View 1 (cartoon, protein in one colour):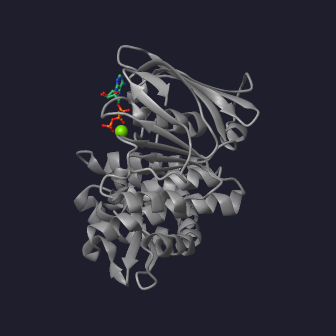
View 2 (spheres, protein in one colour):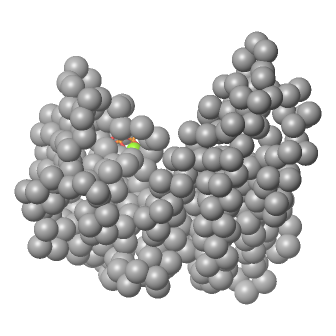
Length: 350
Ligand SMILES: Nc1ncnc2c1ncn2[C@@H]1O[C@H](COP(=O)(O)OP(=O)(O)OP(=O)(O)O)[C@@H](O)[C@H]1O
Ligand SMILES: [Mg+2]
């Protein structure tokens, strides 16, 4: 559990400190007061990455050069300082490198309004969903992903050049195939393990036995990536980009055997997105034996009070939860936890 969190020059805050309880912690504020930023700080401290932004540069407070986050997890003191030039990660006062030991201390699952993009949006959202999970569960995931992305970027840059030279392009085939094959296997294994958990979570949240969710990995290349790549050469020279590989991976989502993106109603799509996130949380619990920190950012928008409370009740009971909302009027008494009000960059316990 994350017992306390301090931020410095983080988004809209110059300095803020907060102590968390186990279980639910609620943050109430109007729009633009910094609710998401507090959740983001918890995520950045535990995972060294943001749940809402792919880089950390926008997190630095306007006009400043660096941000810092620190906090306490169990008996450990975590500290992370970021500037464009340097990142410093410390555990109990000792600078860390490699980061394995630090990153083992906390897992995060983030729920946000934008999760519906997992169902409705393009495949990139679904790859990001897998990557956010994969990097937390397998220490080889991030280096493999980065190595693949590097090879892909270089290869695509050559394909886009005025006179692409096949021999130069082919120099990147080997790393692309090597890392791409590994990444594909890791992602396929993730989806396989997620599938039963997502199905179960979906049954619970939709409270319906007929409305079943099936998820399936749809790889961006065939079983023999090298052969696929060789076959795609003429086409990629025409389109000037690499057209097969894990950057085209996707997850197929079907409700009642029909493509959820095309046929599911808005409420059903929300339920699928929610089930996918709950499945992540359960996977940490099952495979790592630790409950992740759950960030629930204003996800109640379209839900009536009954469903809001039902949703909170279905979250893993022993996980710590940070929940934001603009009001608390809807909360039922059995869902207990400290409530903080955020106003003019100050937190007040209610
Ligand atoms: N790097 C930054 N430096 C300073 N302020 C920033 C930075 N990035 C974002 N902000 C501002 O921080 C404020 C709080 O943003 P945040 O997204 O945390 O608000 P929120 O309470 O979650 O709002 P909402 O209810 O609309 O989601 C916003 O006014 C935003 O413009
Ligand atoms: Mg917000």
